[in-house]
Length: 266
Picture 1 (tube, rainbow, N blue to C red):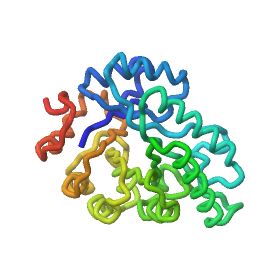
Picture 2 (cartoon, rainbow, N blue to C red; picture 1 turned 180 degrees about the horizontal axis):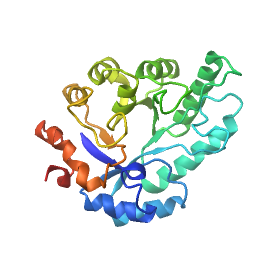
Picture 3 (cartoon, one colour; picture 1 turned 90 degrees about the vertical axis):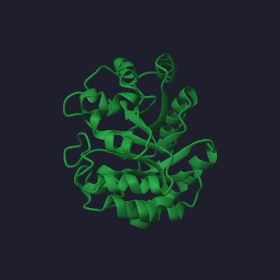
């Protein structure tokens, strides 16, 4: 299991151009970026290459102020969704990133849940077939932070994935959202592990550094490891001070034999 620094949150206090060097100086090799769309894709590719970093995850862009949480489950907006996917894929093609968190958007009372689910299925199947080298992720976002989002819990995401039924579409499992929904991380990992393609972590309730002794986080990560997860653990949190000062939280993971960046173990 490899740690991946989320540049958008972990180094939010720095200008975008300075975040790459900061992550590399803190010992990271792998990074996530929420919305790498304020510069041309090649600019991001050049920054990653210059700092010996690999981009492992991005989100689909916001294509309309009316849909700030995404388009994939929004009937009648297929053309906007396809344009969003095209922009995300351009970044992936330039940078070598192989995974996209596809944002579904909110529940819309003008449509039935079944209509939105059918739209999500059609859009994801289209995208997965169009770009077979990419892995597409769906992530439940807790209802406290993102009220009205189309799915909030792993069980909701798993239901949609069963309908989509495509090998290139899986679950983005975030311990933070699981805890905020009042769920057991260990139980949720065990129940939905077969769907998991990418994992993220943050401490609840304030989305700072995780305290692995709270909310069953350490048990949840251990369960991931015991079930054979070898993917990324994205650090998608806002440091209480600066990133480097808070990285000691990962020491119990290192003690469990999970590979971590070098600064985190000092």
